[in-house]
Picture: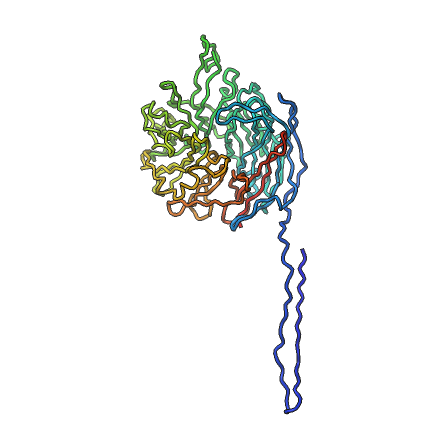
Length: 548
């Protein structure tokens, strides 16, 4: 970019003849127009060499390629008054391969190309004081087989640009964290991509107290060992997660917390899983056709080094009147202020609550800790879910939104019908003893905006809630990451919506993941755009959404 500045000063001296004297007049200053600055952003992305994984699967050959996008600003979403695009396409994932679809009811898929997505987490990977990132990928398309996909480490250069770095992992290889087999009936206990099923939301936290971020996805534990993230799954987790007669354990949401007040993070898993037919939990033969057993809810108790034992002291709901209420959300907190950590669980099917003798369409239950890490107390029912018997509780978080010293609960609630269309963040206020009332209409001033959907065919009911200080004013705000991501800004106990982030006209561009990329007051995001290029190719590109 060049800028030419020319200054011309013309001084005209006028001399009057006669009359005995002369005079001068001020000279005009003429400044020619300057060349406008070049609006094209400079490409500060940290380059990496593309690489691929090839799979010979039941449908033929599939290839997952990790690369960077072409630098073409014409393809970017328009910036807004508050946000601009940065480092567009610093990661692009291309999947070549085609599947035959899956019959999954509301989540059925049609034959077509495999797709990729992923979750983004703030992380500390090298203790240099800058926020790093972990990308945890997933693939989708069919139940009977999906390609494998990796976790990627991104190191902050100190200026908000990120370098892809494999040295933080053992063998200097990005670990596979999902896929390379069936989504449900995986039979390979030693799968390098993890013995799991479904697209869970993994946990990225420090489990062994060394300051480096670790990773847990039910039966897959990658933990820092002298600064190198190493697979410790079967060494550090209970054997119940690695049993042929059980298969991959399924949990919709699981959550970390210091349950025993010893200074390290434990993990609660409201398991929704049975043994395989004809088997008991201990692996013995049940002795009858069609017999199987429900797995218990599990608390993984951390010994401080990232080695976990199992606590099953829960009254898990069982089949009642031919139905089973299904946990889809959970959170941890001391809800009755007795110094012990309690548990809250939200339901996929609140309409079943009455069959258990609970409040009509109750959104969930509080399970109080008796002081000995036993949660088999009589549950406290939460108020009705926002959409009544048409509700799904997608996520839960704790927050003291009225600052009275008692932990309250916020829930992301969507609809069964139309499936995952509709999104309301519901506010439940705690009286200090673990009893809750619904104050949503008083607190969430813009709840109606996405209550009936996003205005597109793209789901806006799923996703995850983040509790963080979005605007750096000292209180807790709420970020909803979903097909139409938005923020609820805390204004002295009431919450006002902030949305209108750079999006694509197609309705995609949601799923904004909050990351503190630079030193500005406001949070930034990692955004994505996905596209189907042909009958056998899909792409997903990631970029920064930066606060101006």
